[in-house]
Amino acid sequence: MAGLFFEEFTVGMTFQHPIRRTITEADNVFFSALTHNPAALHLDEEASKKTEYGARIVNSCLTLSFMVGISVGETTLGTAVANLGWDEVRFPKPLFHGDTIRIETEVAELRESKSRPDNGIVIFIHRCFNQRDELVGVCKRSALMRRKPK
Image (cartoon, rainbow, N blue to C red):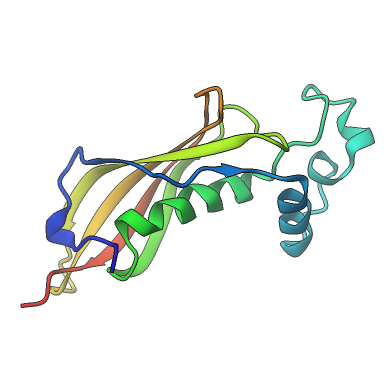
C-alpha cells in the first residue's frame, strides 16, 4: 500500500510526484469525446486557429484528472475512504498537445472526522506545471482518509 494513513500526514508536507506525463492529441480528443464535451476549443483545429490560443487546448477536466490521478500513488492509494470534493479549481494557463506535466501536492489542512472516528480529513493542494515550470492548474481536494489500524 503506497498511500499514507491520516496520522502520517503533516501540514506543509509536500510531494514532488515522480510521474511525468506528455499530453497527447489522442488523450484530449478521447477524453473530450468520452465525456460528451463537443467544444471546438478541444476538437476543431481549424476553428481553434482563430482563437487567442492559435490551436486546440487540452480539456481542463482532463488536466484536473491528471492532477489528482498522478498524486494518488504517494498520497491516498489504499488509504482513502472517499474523495469528498474539489474546491478552488483554477487553470491559469492553457495546456497544449505535446506539453509535459508534473504534479506537486501540499498538505494544507488536517482535521478529525466528527462523524467517523476511524477516519480523518486531509485537504490537499495539487499543483500542475508544464515543461516550462508554468503553473497550469491548481485545486484543493478534500479526502476522507483511514487512520492507522489499532
